Amino acid sequence: MTEAPWGDPIRLASVRQLVVTGPQRSRSAPVVSILPAGDSSELRLRAPDRSPACLAFKGSLAVDGVSLTINRVEDSEHACDVTINLIPHTLAATTLGRLLPGQRVNLEVDPWRAMPSA
Picture 1: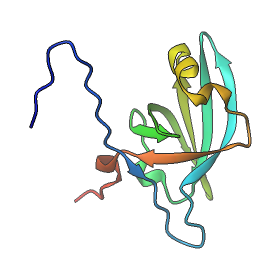
Picture 2: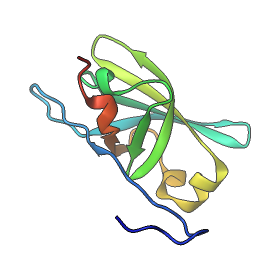
Picture 3: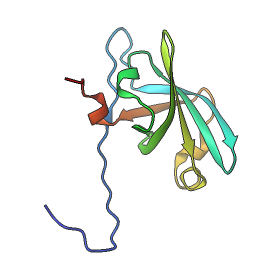
């Protein structure tokens, strides 16, 4: 293991693509909405129906490669709506600032959250 010099940024990524079983093996989700929320924006995605077990409040979800924190998860019979707050820096420094409703995004989840509980 190599130590980073003091003050250098540390970049870690611990996510994996969301794998869905069943007739649709989707790893993507449509953007439901992206609405202003004060200085930020609220991104709402509709994840595949078999993904709720690996999505949780304050859990990690990478959207198009950008690791984000989940603010809300709402389960329904055939889908799971996930809401994420996007701060101005994230909107300016990534492609997420150009998302439109209906557009599909790639999803990756925190592998620890995806592990079944014992």
